Amino acid sequence: MSNLTGNPNGRPRIFKSPQQMQLLFNLYLGYTTNNDLMPNIAGFMRFLFEQQNIPCDRQTFYQYQKYEGYLDTIKHINETLEDTTLNNKTQKDLIKLAYLNNRCGYTNKQDINQTVNLQLDDSSIQSRLAAAGYTLIANNTDNED
Image (cartoon, rainbow, N blue to C red; front, side, top):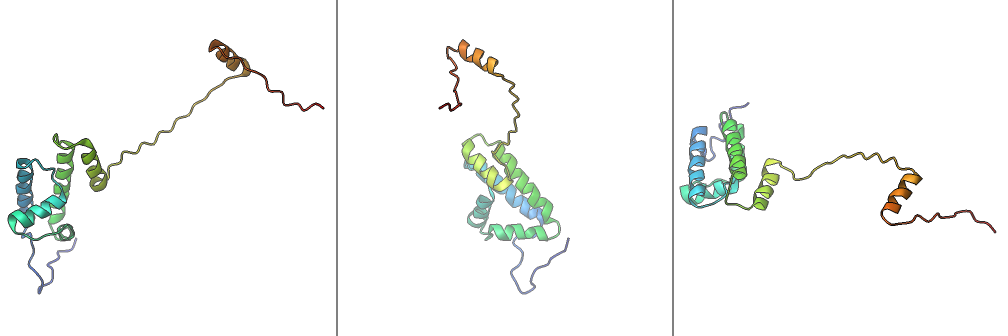
């Protein structure tokens, strides 16, 4: 993994270290708990800007994966968001499911493969129909003139 230092003429890093990123995220989690909010990356970005006066967007946040030491912190943040969503008692399940589908790769699709082997002969079908009160009428397909 490369140790990117960024453009020497560009802006300084928003997060000075992975530990600072984690600390800010922990502050955000406390904020969401105190305000009955479901934590998410967009909310974290808003929290940084509105509560900490740190301008950061999602793209910039994920760019930090390229910097040495930040990848594990970002993975931990994403896993914490997933776990917090799954265990959230105040949000509706549909909202949680939509978030987990879009952000965590969950799916609510089920693939069901079922093989049914029915071995019914004419007499078995006729007896079952008769038991149900029906009569099978034979269809004569012979065309006699």
